[in-house]
Length: 201
Image (cartoon, rainbow, N blue to C red; front, top):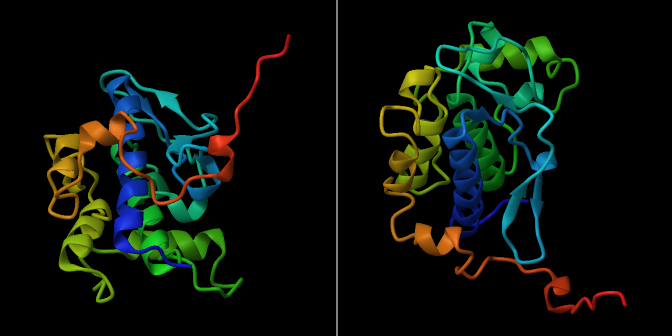
């Protein structure tokens, strides 16, 4: 199913906040994918499974393949070494799935969706190659910014980091402080939120 843009925006912003926190600690998450995200009872997203996360030091560029094939960035596929921008690429894939209901590299044909086939489509991707006519121009620009093939031209890694994500036109009007403090009303809240847990005696 597809998410409406305001719903997707809330979740994308949640994940962006989380990876920004990790990046500030010099950690690359490398596992942004639906299977590794949990919507807690308060309606906010929590990152799960840090198995692929790596602490990087100045000059480090990991070269390993880590994460689902259809979430890997071009620089991961090529093995040329990668940095924090891989998390923004994967955020773009997640956003694509939320808004369009499908992964951009999967065809539904098992023969074509081998790892090699997926990697070929990722490496063949060029800047602004996909016209997202179903989306608002702001969402289209944001998504294309995240899916820039060149890591240093990708939204979130072009010099001002996370501030560029927050200042984008698609995120206009979102109160980031309220989001961080969980003061925004989430799109969905679990029925368990109102359950009171009594400490055992």
